[in-house]
Every structure is written in structure tokens, then in C-alpha cells.
Length: 314
Image (tube, rainbow, N blue to C red):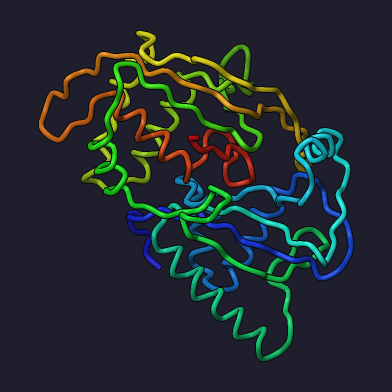
């Protein structure tokens, strides 16, 4: 399959049921990432190779496996890396976003094949996480789902929508970092080395999203986001953190602990808007709104393909 410019973005919830009782580590983002690639490899090896070997554009995101337990219990288990029980009578959920339009029909046809196979030969495992096998229960893509984490759009539709939005002189945007988030900063040549930034400062969030837009958007829309303009607006403190309810957190990957943060953050976009220089350009504040809408699909920050950085505006 050719790698074409993605025209549509999808956010899906995949509901799974374990085949038998067992346990699983509380943060399984790495396992889900590997299982998804293995599942695609069986259906379309060339696509799996492109996703795994390239991974430069990060054409999908995966969440952690969501257990049906209260949030405080899940956070405690993640911090202590205490395995959680799996019950065949309960349903567990994965959120996946597809940032390459061609992946959706591939997923759809593979799911139809899986359903046909199950109907003809009894229940077959859909996905294996660690030592645990899961059956496919349901896939949800409707924007009307009550979870608030599903939907689909296109880059053109996002641009059209932001052109028509009414911005107040000082616009307030509140969003939730629903899974562990962090920003990988520094480099090996620095005398201080690398580190993980544990706050969603505007200078981390918006330039990161601007780069994702330019990586993923069709050529005719990539330039609608102007990185230099956004960085200047941030440097002039045009966007500030108005409020937050953030807390540091940590999870355990296979070979190392990972620190980050969770919670809500409110950004204030201060006016006045810059007047676009040319017809068709977006003001800088509209660009920032556009990028936070994009974040619903791309996530924000480090290891978004392994369960981190899930984000949505309220």
C-alpha cells in the first residue's frame, strides 16, 4: 500500500473481553502497541512494516488498556506496578486513533474478516496482550458516543471550522491530559543530557502540535500553521496558563519507569488577534485553537503510540 497524505482522522474505541481469568500489568501501552502492529502485520505486512520501521510520522496512537475500576485504584496500581485482574464477564477498552486515512478501510476490512472467521469457526482470539488473549466485542467510531473519546474529521473540516469560530478578546480553553504525559527534552550533546518535562507549558505544547500538523496535513493545508508566528506569540506571553489541576505520576514500561503528569490545564489566549498577512491565512489564536482540536487525535508529547499523551478539550 502506498503511503499517501492522510485526509481523515479517526478516533475509535475497541472493546475487548478476556478469554479467561488472569492478570495484566496496569499500564500496557507497550503491549498494545506491539499487538496492534502484529495484528496489522497479519492483514497487510507492507503496512505494518511502514508503521514500525518508519514511525517517523507516528501515524496512529494507542491508549493503555482501560480497566473497569475507579480512577484512584488504577493510579495506585500504576504507581506500584501491581497487576490487575482480568474477568471474562467484564469488558475492557482500548482507544486508538488513525492519522493516515488509508488505515481505516484496512482496519474495517480486517475486522469484517475477523467477524466472518469467528462465525465460521467459533470464537478466535482477536488480540494477545502479554499472556492474555482477548475477544473483540465492539468497535465504536460515532462522535455521539457518550464516552466523548470517539469521532472522525478531516484536516479541511478542521480548518473550515476554525475559520468560522467566534473568538472572544481573551479566549479560555480547558483540556484534560487523560493519560500520563511528558515532553522529551534536551539532547545527548547537551552538557546536561536529556530529561522529561513534567508540565504542559505553552512553549512545549503548541510547537509540538504545530510540527505534527505540518507532518500530517495535506500539502495545501500544511502551511496554514506557522511555527515562527506561534513561537513569537508564546515568547510574548500571548498564551498563558490560566489554571490547572495537574499532578505528577509514574508508570512502569517493560524496562524502565516513566514519569509524567495527569490532569486538567486551562490556557488563556490573549488578544488582540494578529491580522493575517494574506488571504486564507489564520490568525495566531485560531492556529492555537486548531492545534488543540488536532490534539484529540494525535495526543500530545512523548510516546503517544504507547498509551501516553491522550488529550481532549472540554
